Length: 103
Image 1 (spheres, rainbow, N blue to C red):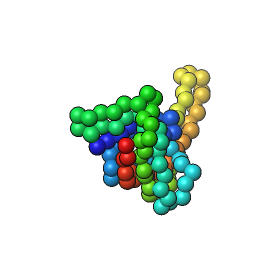
Image 2 (image 1 turned 90 degrees about the horizontal axis):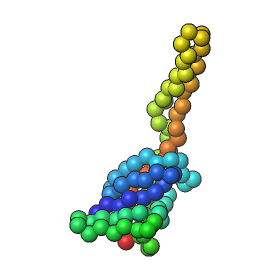
Image 3 (image 1 turned 90 degrees about the vertical axis):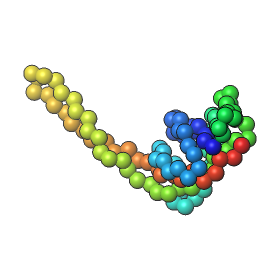
């Protein structure tokens, strides 16, 4: 059984027991959160699609940790102009573990 949920403006395909890194969520480590914006639930050949989301469907998850991704480097360069600008960025994330998919 799998579900497609929306969190932080992005869509994720999740199954029970999976851990994934989402945009930062305002919750403490160990808390349980639920995602109500479930776009689709599939179980073998039985697929339910919402318009835009399924009524009464919920995905439960527990917060595993908070952290920051690896640093990415942004480089702006203009040739022959003695111009070079370099910046770095680390995005915050919340790691969650999917515990239950309820229809």
